Amino acid sequence: MDITSLNRDQITEGLERAKSEQTEKSETVRILFSPRIIDQSNIDEVFKIYSHIEKDDFDTVVIVESHPGSAEKKLPMPSFKTVQTSLGEVPANDKLRNDFCDEDDDFFIDDEAFDEELSLYDQLMLLQCSLDDFTVLSIQITDENSFIIKELAYALEEILASKNALIVFCCDMENKNRNELRNVLSFYNEGNMTGLMNYVNTGDSKIEGIGAFVAGLIVAKKWGLKLTFSSMEDSTSDHTNLLSGYAEMQRQAIFK
Image 1 (cartoon, rainbow, N blue to C red):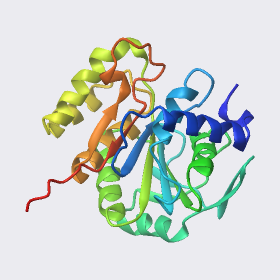
Image 2: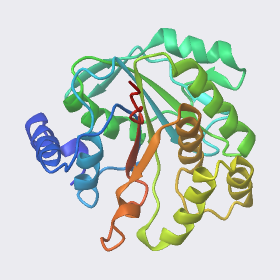
Image 3: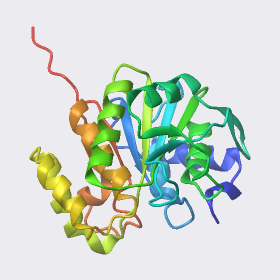
Image 4: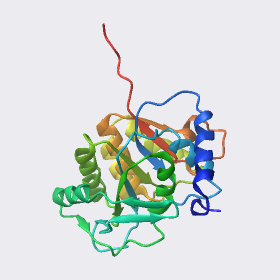
C-alpha cells in the first residue's frame, strides 16, 4: 500500500485520528519534514505531522525534494500550470515560481527532472485533505553541495517570510542512525552553521535527501522556529523515518 492507493475518506480519517491523539495544540506550523515515499510503513507517522495543519492555515505550499544529478540546472522548477492527483487538480503558483527565478540564476524553469516518481504527488495527497484551497510550487535540488543548499535556504527564507506559505521538505533517515541525527541537531541548537555545512560536505551522511533536510534546518533557524521530531522525544519507539517532524512558531511571552 502507498498513499496514492488511498481515497479522500481514508486519508481524512487518518488525519482526524492523529489530531485526536495530540496531547497539546501546536503553534502555527511553517515547516514539515516528511518521508519522500509515503506507504504503510510510515503512514501513521505522516498523519501525525500533517495533523498539525488546520484547513485555512495556508494558501500556498512549497515542496522541496532532492534528486541529485537528475538535471543540469541546480534548482529546477517545473513549468506545469496544475498538478493532478487522484483527488483532483492543484494549481501551480506561477508568480511565486517567477519570484524564485528572479532571485538567483540557479533557480530555473526546467521540466527535465520531473516525472511521476516525485515525492510531490505523495505530499499533495495529504495536503489536499489538510487544506481547503491552495497553490503549489515544486523545487528540486539536483546538486547537494553546501553552496547550493545555503542559496536555496536563504531564498526560501527571504521570499516566503511574509507569505502565508507552508514548506514541505522531503527526506528520510533510518532508525539505526539516531546518534548521527543527534549530532546534526546539536549543530542546529548551537547555531553552528559551519559545523552543519562541514557535515554536508563530508558526503558521509545517512540522510536520504540531505539537501532538503539541511535547507529546512537553515530556514527554521532563520525564522526562529521550534523543531519537533517525535523520534528524538520518544527514543523507545522504532520510527520508520527519524526525520518525520515539523517546525512551529514559538509562543511569545506577554509582558504587562
